[in-house]
Figure 1 (cartoon, helix red, strand yellow):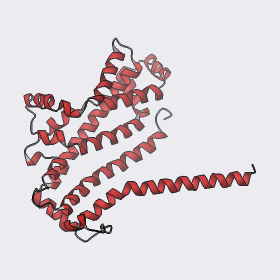
Figure 2: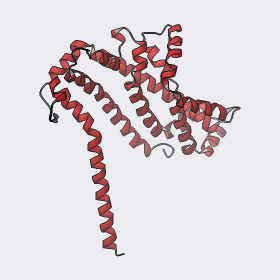
Figure 3: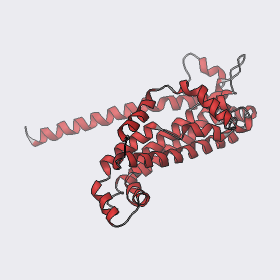
Figure 4: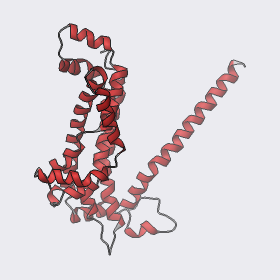
Length: 280
């Protein structure tokens, strides 16, 4: 096969891949775009035939309805505090546990790691009642601390960190650091932590978005409107007799914007961290 024909085939495959990815991206972005359209339209546009696909002029008006019904900004702040604290604690605990499982030898290590993995197959709804009982006994009902505490131990995070440390941190590097007199925590802080920054970015996105979108536990624990997270507050926008879809989707739209910002920030950290780490 001649070189021109090979180049043509490669260019055709490249064009096909980019075209496929572009179409897939449009399908992925369409629900967010449609939510924006509904957030700028009257409630009647929700069931209109043909469907409304162009933005309206009621973005500010619908959002004003949201702020009249709930304390939107306080709820957003509460969600931001909960998600930020949970993400930081999960990253710390998961990275330390992953480092220990990957590089240390201690009795029962494999059994303990298997037990942690098995908790991933248990539906979180099954733990709702015992978790509620424990949080109640601790006096943390209707507090943000009561919401956060059940998310601190993340089996998926421990698994991801253990795998990443096992594959990315050479044993020789740790042994050399021990010969130089470094403690285990110093090794973690100075050697392991810079290498696993890409895993931090990935796990941070997963944890932050998961906690932000979690509803059942937050709805169970929180009662005071001042402590509402954004998911619980948005649930109070619905009315059995009169559902204003424009108002509800306006609140949902603005509640989604912080997730996009967090994703972009972590995504940039992920890309930049690929070229850093052990070499640096």
